[in-house]
Length: 394
Ligand code: SAH
Ligand code: SF4
Image (cartoon, rainbow, N blue to C red; front, side):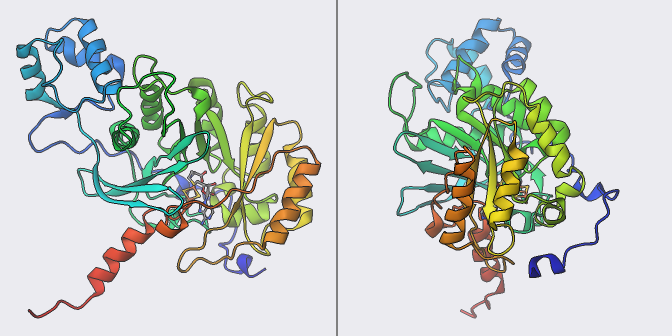
């Protein structure tokens, strides 16, 4: 197995490399005004109280922002003119700047966003028959360097702020004209998966604040059952996430032995498979209607044998779960190939025979590099090639 040859020597005590960088503060605006998106309800109430406004004003403002999609104070006719002027002096209701937008032939849509400090991240909308899912990023880059994932090769890493995370949902609603948030309508944005760039449980506080905003009944009002957080296995945070946010959980497993998972998902050296599975078994609120999704990227000759499928069945025993088999999406320089269809089918059949739902995830948006683990790579390459191009002498 060539994939294992260049693996780093195992040292389970050397885990410092996995520690996330501390979140940078949200970059301040040059005009000194502050962003209202991303504030919790309590924070917004406090900000308005400092202007002498009673609590119900914060509720009104919240509705304008998260039910009506307002981006300025002018049209907020149930607020006095003076108060609107005060708000406009101090605050903005912004969106991430969209620097590139692409649509795949299969309808998948990708937005490249640039934040105030020039850093970039992407989010992707995937339309399906009965729902539309927005794949949201939680960090710029990722510290975890999983071997098959392009995001892990990106040097720059910082946590996204609550405003930047919620902003992705806001810009998607803008794009589909899905304001105001009315009930019973067929919507293009129904589900959220935290499966874009970054490890959400390494940016827990900001992700939690953003998800509480998205869940708030008086605003965007998404249901917990329609939000899935995907983690590569930050064991100590899994329980906390389950207790506090009660979101659906996806776990990027990808291997059934520590020997291989240490290589594919280096965080495994800190939190090996047995600890990860124990945390999954304890995830609050699990039932047959509320299962953990285990993600398993299919890598040719590396993790795709029938014996590994059988071992996976053993690992899942006692955990209400389903398995998403993800055909590997190669990227330039990636060290792996995608498993053959026959190998994937055989793997899926073993899981299904054991009673597990095991869909093979159809790759979406491949033509616009919107598939798992590829986000931002196309835009980075364009920039690199521009940087390398000779300057014309005109
Ligand atoms: N950091 C989190 C969430 C983002 S990654 C996590 O790892 O779970 C979202 C999913 O895409 C993960 O299951 C990841 O393993 C998968 N993925 C990453 N790169 C991929 C690639 N090149 N091909 C297929 N799936 C990939
Ligand atoms: Fe980070 Fe997830 Fe990619 Fe691993 S798979 S490098 S945890 S984004």
